[in-house]
Length: 251
Ligand SMILES: NC(=O)c1ccc[n+]([C@@H]2O[C@H](COP(=O)([O-])OP(=O)(O)OC[C@H]3O[C@@H](n4cnc5c(N)ncnc54)[C@H](O)[C@@H]3O)[C@@H](O)[C@H]2O)c1
Image (tube, rainbow, N blue to C red; front, side):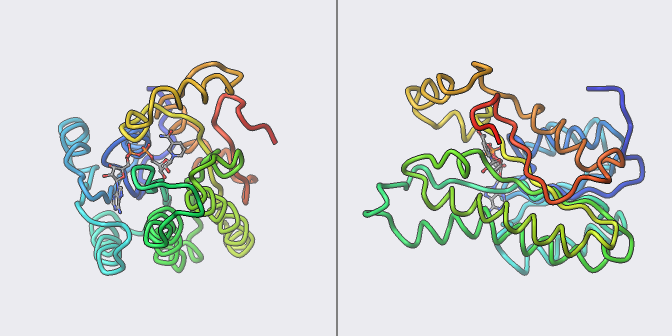
């Protein structure tokens, strides 16, 4: 941990914060003084990892981020307990890699699943927090992927959803900038998480071979960038997508 405390008294929401990158982001904000509400299909690991240390500054709720009723109830509960959301991290997303196929054989049900969880969930959650952020200012950070830029074969639906996140970020940033709300995205490359562990070793080797830095990142590499974008120091940065991928894709 850095020793910085940039978020005392801030209310932060992290979707998919039960494991992997989202858990790293939740830990980072808690470590810097924030109250953090996590929504995850299985928030148990977040409770185990963080509740003892951070107590009432953590609200870890089990629920599906693609379900409208669930996110409305979660948002209301967060506001009731912690007050309006200052910082929204739309982290949840999935590639559906286990069910992926060459595009000509791909299944539309899988496209819809990937778009729901990786793009529409971010749009819905942002729509819930936007009215209060328009009054009070705020920060939104969305999760893209360098797979959108590199266009990984076999992941057409995922690349489409994650490039959709880039467009969503830009348009919403333009709408909300006059209200002191910044909207940015991060696009990680290979980061060591559970999702990453299920990727075949030869695919990881190929990715590392195409990564100038020559290694796989850790959740905290993403969390550190997200926290910067959510901080006061980043007030003049909006509509951007920052790649965190050891140089695999350079803009
Ligand atoms: N790990 C990587 O290499 C990598 C690279 C680029 C982008 N990303 C993106 O980062 C984000 C996090 O990925 P990760 O690797 O940490 O994944 P992960 O599988 O390790 O963790 C994802 C978390 O989201 C939760 N989750 C999944 N679907 C959910 C749903 N519908 N509702 C609520 N919770 C749900 C899971 O229970 C889990 O706790 C995703 O958007 C992913 O696309 C990851």
